[in-house]
Image (tube, rainbow, N blue to C red):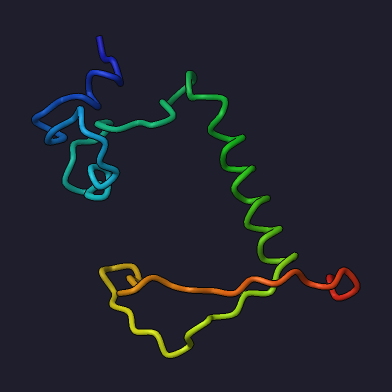
Length: 103
């Protein structure tokens, strides 16, 4: 019998499994299949999975359409590891768009 909570706590797959470390799940290619299934899978998949996805899409939609985003320091340096990583963070200025401008 397979139990997700026991797979997630397997020390041979995830070192120090009881410590909170989101980086455990960054190396997806080096862990065995089905070692981490945050929302479950198959016919018993968590009903909150689709809700969380939809909620994220709606939030991003409103952030993009309702606000204007500007970089505070346009000449900021970054490295790729493989995603862009900003040395000192990424400061942005967010302003509300005027309702008449939204299309």
